[in-house]
Image (cartoon, rainbow, N blue to C red; front, side, top):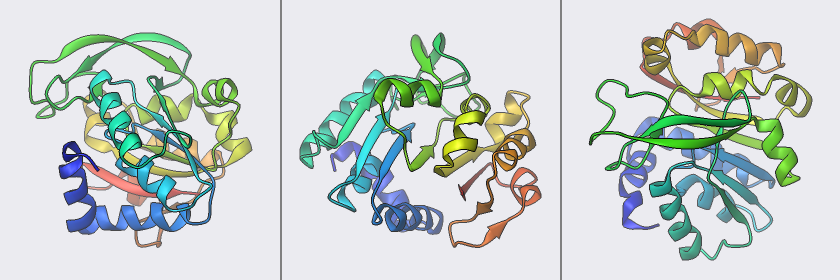
Length: 228
């Protein structure tokens, strides 16, 4: 991995939460399939997923021009040009464009500036948005796995994908940003209920069942879970 992934590597290898998340993804990746890595950041999870099985493929969804360059680097370092496709879009509840904020230091994009979340003065950028279903149709690919880590925009991504999720039921590795949703006056409960209506149940990184209440009423700022 490039040096830009150092903090990600430390998170996934030294923290209990990171190690649990990494184990879940690596374990399921070893069975083979396609991952839509939505909010791919520097591409560590995308590259790991490809490395776990010789037939695995990834669509790395990352609208940030800074982070998409890092994705290209990690893809080249691991010889994954044929199995890791980089898409400079965001997944939301409609197909179109909208203005978002880019942190020029960290490289990530957010729908708004959250408290204590950006290292430099944000820049406004136009971002192309697609629903999960529209992206799958355009790419002629249906993922068996979806990773969502998109700074509260999981609300829009999930609500715009109800029919797709209900029909295809990909396993979802979800980072639910309870604090950011609260800042946007959006309901974590609504996200959980939508997934339940799509037929999903929830598990923590240790594989234990989670109730919807344990998720949306959690005192944590973010919660990592597997929905399947």
